[in-house]
Image (cartoon, helix red, strand yellow):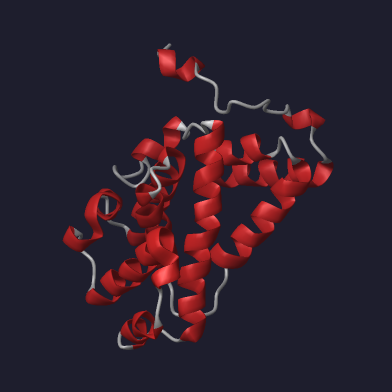
Length: 197
């Protein structure tokens, strides 16, 4: 067994599935059935059930919505790029995996995490990430010109809100993941990199 397999997934207690409230247990079991494993974010945040519910309600409102022009890959691209700027290992690895899966591009997540300006993305996606990174690192400097630059690429006000909200929400997530030393699941590292058997 590898030494890293013994490393804790959080600095805080991780509850046993059987000890969780039924609604949270049902969410975790459903995720496990779909993914084939339980992403550590579900287990670590279950330490605080009320916050778990609030976190995933807002997560789902932002990431699972079917309105606006942002694709699932666009949303994961925002998370990957801004989480890299916040040096959040968990989110870069986990959401980078989802970006690879949704984009069907095994190279894209690494490119976006390191330097989106060198990534194989469209000018529209570059503008989206320019804005997201500014929200991430320098939000007080956002002006009408930043919104205008997005509108020039076909984003509307609701899309702009989504980009900002995803960035802001994952800023919270990045900081919590870093503070509790949330480990990414080993399964994430290869997802979307190699063809499924």
